[in-house]
Image (cartoon, rainbow, N blue to C red; front, top):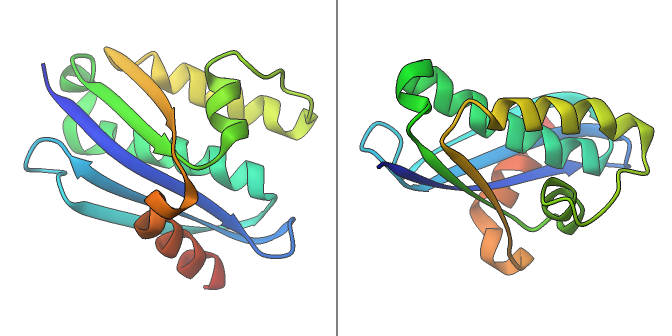
Length: 139
């Protein structure tokens, strides 16, 4: 059973404002391990950017491995967004209407994998993804 460990972050300047996402694959098969990706995502709130980062990570994994292999992967997502992690674990309600579509998309994408686990980390533990997201937001 393959396991992929990915650190994610979203950044938004002016909230809402220019936003970006960054993902760092810390552990996994050789095709993905130690690789990182980022992209600018237009005008978003900080919370929308956090969700977008998780969605981007899962889409990137599916793009690299395909649907068949993805079904057998365990994905461990590490994020410093308490809101994202606790909403995905069902511990927080979604109060912001603009996050509902992001939640649904992320939840549905998660079903394409054996398991997707969301873990909360301190901001200091997420420096690589944070830097990538901020650089992408500036573009």
